[in-house]
Image (tube, rainbow, N blue to C red):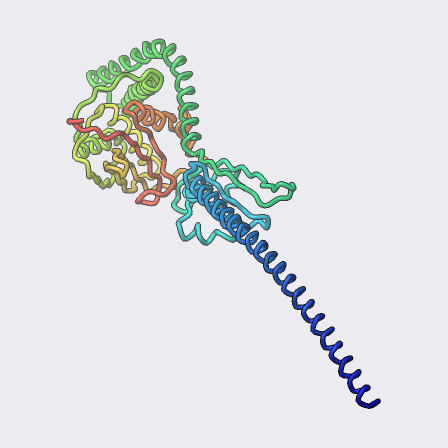
Length: 403
C-alpha cells in the first residue's frame, strides 16, 4: 500500500508540474502573440513612415533635378560667360557664352571639365583681359571671380564671370578718334583759308617760273628741277589741307553706281606717282557693282594702296572687292610688307600718327572717315595678308542700284 501511495503521489506531482508547465507555455504563447501583434503594428507604422519618407525624398530629388535643369537652362541662356569651379578648384561648368568668348570648340569645352583652368583664361588674366584666340581674333575680356559659400559659410567653389568687351572697346576707340577729329576740324577750318592763299600764290609763281624758263630757253637742269619741286610741294601742301578739311568737316555723299573692278584699278593708278613704277597688282572681285561715292572711295583706296607701296616698294599687291559672310562689301588691300604690330593698330588711325619720316599720318585716318560716311568701318586684320604682310580692309554695307 505504501508503495502504491507513493506512486500515486508522484504521478499527481508530475501532473501538477505538467499542468503548471502547460499554463506557463500558454501564458508565454499568449504573451508572444501579443508581442508579435505589437511588433507587427509597429512594423506597419515604420513601413508607413518609410514610405512617406521615400515619397518625400523622391519629391526632393525631382525638385533638385528641376532646379538643376533650370540652372543649366539659365547658364545656357546667359549672354555673359560663366565658368564654375568646385571646392577643389576643378571646373564643373562652362556655359556656351564662355566657350564662345574663349574660342573653345565643343571638344575643348568638354576636355576642360575637371581641369583646374583653361589656357586662354590664364593668358587673359595675365594680360588684364587682352587675348588673341587660336583663330587669330583679338578679344578684350572683363574677368571677375566670386566665391560661393554654403549656409555655414564654408566655400563650396567659385564662379568666374567673363564679359566680352571687344565691341564696346572698339566703339570707345572710335568715339575717341572722332573726338580727336572734331578737335582737329576746329583748328583746320580756322587755318585752311589763311594757308591756301599763300600756297596758291607759290604754286602760281612756280608755274610762271617754269613757263619763263621754257620761253627764255634756259637749259640749267637744276633751276628747272627746283621750279618743279616748288610746284609739287605746294600741291602736296594743298592736298594735306584738303585732307584735313575732309577729316574735320566731311561733305555728304554723292552716291552713284560703281563698277568694283574699275574702282580698284582707278585707285592704283591714282596712287602711282611719276617717280614710281606700276606695281604688280592682282585684282580679285566677286562683286560686279555697288553704290557709293566714287570719288571718296577712290581717295580712300588710293591712300591704302599708297601705304602698301611705301612699306614694300617693288613688291606685288593683291586688291579685292568681295562680299563677306555677313553680307557686307569688303575692299581689301594686301601687301607683302612687314605688317602692322598689334600695339600699333589702334594708333595708326589717329590723324598725324605715322612711322615714316616722309608720311603725313592722314591716309588711314581719312580712309576711316570715308568708310564711316558710308556707314562702314576700316579694319586692320590681326592675321597676315595673303602675301604675308598687312591686310587693311574697308567694310561697307553692300548697296546695289536696286537697294
